[in-house]
Length: 126
Length: 279
Length: 193
Picture 1 (tube, rainbow over the protein chains, first blue to last red):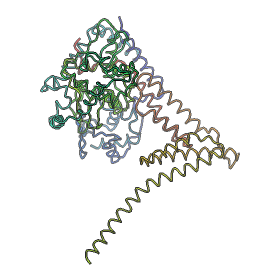
Picture 2 (picture 1 turned 60 degrees about the vertical axis):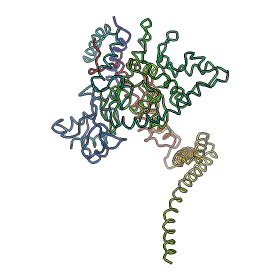
Picture 3 (picture 1 turned 90 degrees about the vertical axis):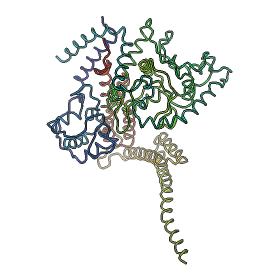
Picture 4 (picture 1 turned 180 degrees about the horizontal axis):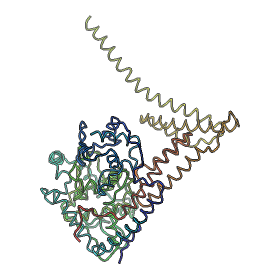
């Protein structure tokens, strides 16, 4: 016995799967890119309310009035090990944790590709 | 390919399990909802949740209590009272639509079996106006907020008691739709209502404390310092949607009425305390 | 005598501040009026060349209506857009009239123009699809409108960029809504079953 809601759910799951397969533009996966951004520019973006606004949720040393929703952005290298891992997290945090609250800055094109690279460089340096 | 099959299988299994729980779901949902927030904020007495962030932020509360000595929504209540007393062009008044008087907020939102839809007080007000040859009011702010403020004030202390009639499965559907809307991620920022108001309630977004969702609907309409004026639940829904970079649904759309139905149900047991003042 | 010198000095100081201040404020209004005048001139020229200038004329009227309320920046923006649109339309028309001039083919659908148009159509379609499942994002509609405005001023590359972004938003919004169709209590809030 399946309720209509469940049928909808299954339809949705298969539809989502088909969408992911069919559309050439399926950016759940971070595309190949050279992570050669500018850390200083990345810092600006991280503190800018209309851009990354990372400080809204994360403590960033030197930033004012940080939020306390996400972990502090310190000791990044020992936690993530590679710059690529940091990039993937910023691209779409729900890959690592489906219940993550952090917006998918790369996948949802919140940042441009250059801005993304710059932020990755900055965060990796913390 | 294998992934799809696994997903479908998982969905199938999950559905079979879920159907058993579906019948008694709302009460259990409400218990889980309220238990979650009471556990997250163990020092907050139940009724205090109706005061939102001021139940958990001592400094904010001090400022708020000072503001409440000369409430910024008083003018709205007075204006609303005048609207209530003023006859329409055809000589009738709001009392003809609402014979039990203005203290009826806890009857809304409710499921209208005849029309098969959720009816909110705001919708009922405009239907009253249109039935009497008057133009409907805009839903997000302005005169409707004044009238709602008056009716909310007269209804203070009433216990929220939204009912989902068991003899109409469409009511359950509306409740479920509202629930889905509340928990669904949306907008470019991919936030759901739960992202901020459950998972991160009590934490700070920059310096703003995120209010817990328990008690969210109790104090509307609300005077928000940010707006410098009154606003309704529709206004707040639209604002939240825009903040997560989603396009808001239309005021009093089926989506927002279903959402209000679910969200108000989650606060069953709390006392109405509108109109409210917030940052 | 010292008082008079002081007064003269003070007066000069005040004028040094006040005159530029009033000049700045007056410049805003003058700037807006100048932008509108230039737009009107372009509008007349385009109309004289037989171009349908109803829309741009309306925009100029809108810009003028913003002057009494001092919305100078907005007025300048609208007037400039109208001017650019009329100038572009005129350039397209005169290009066609002159025929083959130095290899330039005006008023024809260049591949760049066609691609931009197609992408705008695709973006609008994606936006509607997202809207149909309640998943439209906040800025998609505005982006499409900006892309359309860029088409009218011949800025095809800009139009293409905006339309591409908008198309992605529509696609992502649709996928998001479909993925969230079964959204329910998360693991940390699970009701007892």
